[in-house]
Figure (cartoon, rainbow, N blue to C red):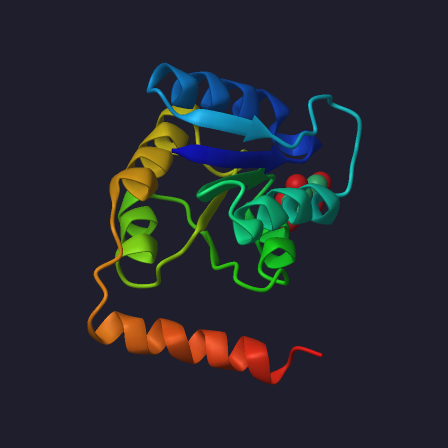
Length: 149
Ligand code: RB5
């Protein structure tokens, strides 16, 4: 499975650790940066990874900023993206099972590395349950279409 990953300056080290962790597990990871500690703007990086997921270049995405919030908000502006900002593994599993999230986001200033690993594990190994959840996800898509120019 090909995973898009991106982060801002608040999360560079955690991103590097998560890339190594995912590659160890056999995932192919496409890194959209940033790879330095200089201050950058999270919407730029969140957008790049979100576009890779929306286009089908990558199947899933992982976004990390200070809180996970700003970068997920930016990603959610890309049509077709359902990015969920979480801080523990149960929500990471449920956002895939119920909401068919295609990007998981979390904060390097909020969760430690072991919790971050548990979050990506829970997200990437879960599957969308469909059924009644499909109708609701379709409703989200309809809202997106309603406001698309
Ligand atoms: C950067 O200081 C910080 O605002 C950013 O990483 C993120 O937490 C925004 O949501």
